Image (cartoon, rainbow, N blue to C red; front, top):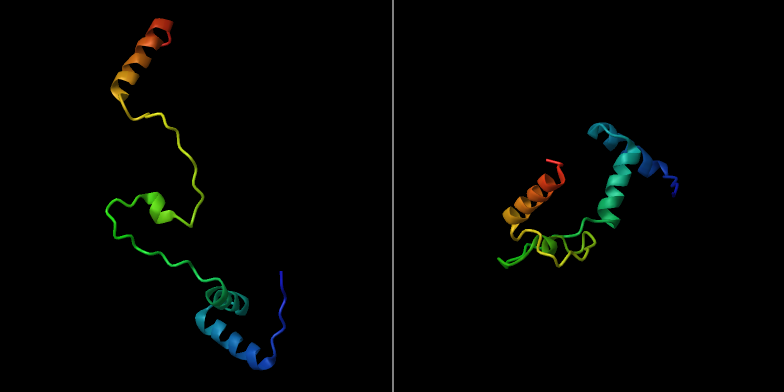
Length: 92
C-alpha cells in the first residue's frame, strides 16, 4: 500500500469534487488513478461466425483442457442403460 500526501492546491479541489459527486476524496482519487494507470482491456469484437466463447474471453481467463470423451453423444441410451443397471442392483 502506498500513502500519498497531497499539497493544498490539489487536496482542496479533490475534496470539493468528491463532495459534489457524493463520494470520498480517497475513492475519487483511486477511481481516477485506476482509469489512468490500469485501464480496462479493450474487447475487440470478432467478425468470424466461427468464433467461440473461449475466443471472446481469450486474455481474460485461463483455459483448461477438456475431456476428449463425447459425453453429449448417445445421452438417451446411456441414461436408459444407467436405469437398467440400477434396477438390476435393486436401487431403483
